[in-house]
Every structure is written in C-alpha cells, then in structure tokens.
Amino acid sequence: MARPCPCGRKLTYETCCGRFIDGGQAPSTAVELMRSRFTAYGEGAVDYLVRTTGGAARESLDRVALTEHCKAIRLVRLEILKTEGGGPADPTGVVAFRAILRQGGRKYEQTERSRFSRAADTGHWVYVDGEID
Ligand SMILES: [Zn+2]
Image (cartoon, rainbow, N blue to C red; front, top):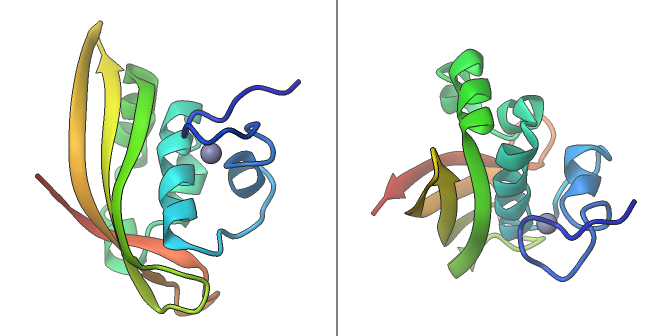
C-alpha cells in the first residue's frame, strides 16, 4: 500500500526513506540519510537509528529511551535549510534542518545542524553529532 513518505518528498515511503529503513539500501548522500533518520523516528525504527549513528555516539545511545521518544512524538514536517558537502563522493557532510514535531498535543520545532561522515567499516553515511540551535 503506497503512502506518502513522512520526510515530505513527493515520493511513496517505499521508494523514498523506506528503501533505506526497511530495504537495506544505503543512502548515497548525507541529506538522504538525514531524511531517512527523521522518518525512522516516526516509524519507531530504533535499529535503523542505532545503525546509522557513528562510533562514539552510538555507544552512548539509550535504546529504551530512544524507543520511548519515538512512541511519544509525531512527525509533522521536515525542512532542509542548508547542506554542505555530503554528496556521493564526499567524506563528510553537514545538514541544517528544522524538524516540526508534535508531542503530548503540542507542536514544537527543533532546528539543528547535524554532521555526517562515512563509517570506517562500510563507507556508508552515519550521523556524527548535531548542534541544536
Ligand atoms: Zn522520505
């Protein structure tokens, strides 16, 4: 059943973020990874969020807290504000975005500048860290 992708591109979930989250494909750009991670929060795809977090940050992830967070929020909209690097041939990338979310009946926004790099073992994009504005 086709449904629109929560990340806001005019594609179905299966052809957009779903092919990364469920389909085992690897995003070729940092912004694709960013979009799929946003979508993964809405899908409760904790394994995907863990898998796409790089090195040190992955070790400090609390899976229980992450699962609860995914359950508590509803995705409203994602706006990509700016990207630097992060292309198919780049080793690193930065994506600035605004995520509009809903929690406990209240809408709120999170603006963040996330850094991405390539995992040493697979060469796939991973989330490194982010600065919340
Ligand atoms: Zn998507």
